[in-house]
Length: 262
Length: 329
Image 1 (cartoon, one colour):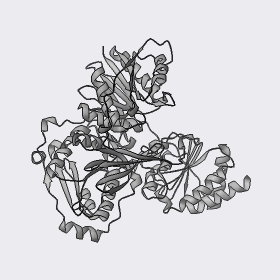
Image 2 (spheres, chains in turn green, yellow; image 1 turned 90 degrees about the vertical axis):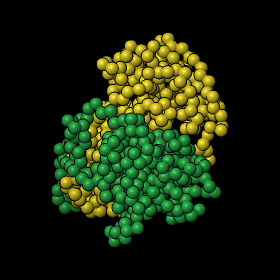
Image 3 (cartoon, helix red, strand yellow; image 1 turned 120 degrees about the vertical axis):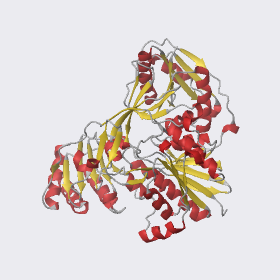
Image 4 (cartoon, chains in turn yellow, cyan; image 1 turned 60 degrees about the horizontal axis):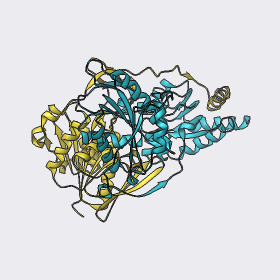
């Protein structure tokens, strides 16, 4: 199966691990402003890792799709260094702040333009809007078998066999390919890549940019997220009392804290 | 008449807690729009659950019974729900942001070409245009957003424990059967087996000792186990928790994960060790009664939500703490 083809949809978002002090809610513009670099949404990184492992087993190629008004270098470099053969930037003014359904619509058109593939992988949800919809809607729009919350993916005799997280443990499910799979973090974190390797990999990579016209999406079908208001959450802060001293003294004082809470 | 339809879930022959909460949400919305609310139950035999649900005041309880609806087979549930929707034509369709709702919600949104908002913590009908105002935490909990979309059905999944179940009263509604036109050929994803795993019930813990990336290695959890054991002399239900990063690194299984995509908890005491406090983690534990943080980085988020903080290497503090706790027991 040398031409096994995996498409990974990866979204770029402001770093969700950024310190609270770097996060500001702009109620006027209705935007969460994070003073931190853009990163690949964590669950999408898990999806990319799953894809790289499959490629190690099966050969073939990985195409990363990233959609936005303007796609940053981060997504691109990191994806390629990890093992993606191609990163297609879906970039257009029209792609700004789309709702989940519209995002999936544009991704579906891009995937139809790509043509043949075996698997589409997405993260279970994005770290900015936490919506958890695009992957499954995309699967439905493409008429694919949909598997959510994957923690392990294997290809066996032309079918995909997935361990899917369920409340009581996991379920082993099997589907014909092509199929769509949303990936959860149990898959494991994206491998670390050295800067040298990153630069080397970048040289051979294909990085086309497609706009709305190129993928043939009906722009009148694209709708913006219907945000009415955006506000700060209630303050979660408490007054932290720091416990000082040597480790022994800290251990002792902490013990007193626990004893008082019994 | 305008109708709010709730997709219920049945547990041990009765509507589960979150279904009852959804009935509370449905009742509120029905009141606001001058309509009624109803419940849809799917399964092989949901008669008992349907009878039991009537006392909560729905105008209709729709039963979709079919042997293939036993257990949750997503392909069939989505198809059956689509069929039910087209017969009932409700204005609003709600489901729980549960394992079932997280899968069915987006897929039914695609089938019905209607916009969904997931994990809502408040719902209201806009009196101006009759559309559903959907309040949802976004950006991992950094902000709260209200969304509104055109079209029908108005579609949302709802977080647990935010609405109260309606008070039981006289059952005035009626039970109605809807046929599910489904068969085996509609199953695209086949279930091979369900493997049960022992998992920690973190939401039942009174004390959680949790570790994150700051532990530096998997072995760090051994020290946390020792601390949990020592605390066990004084507290019941002491359990081990973790951040998402610890799961990603393969140090611990995901049933220990606390946060937005793990378990949301509010124990009496939360001990955060080497967890810097990404917002998606904080929203899962910030309602703990007391929070104790141990971290080498004094500037990290966790100290901002903690009651007590120790800026020190956990490998030094925890052994000292364990020794003291053991000494006194």
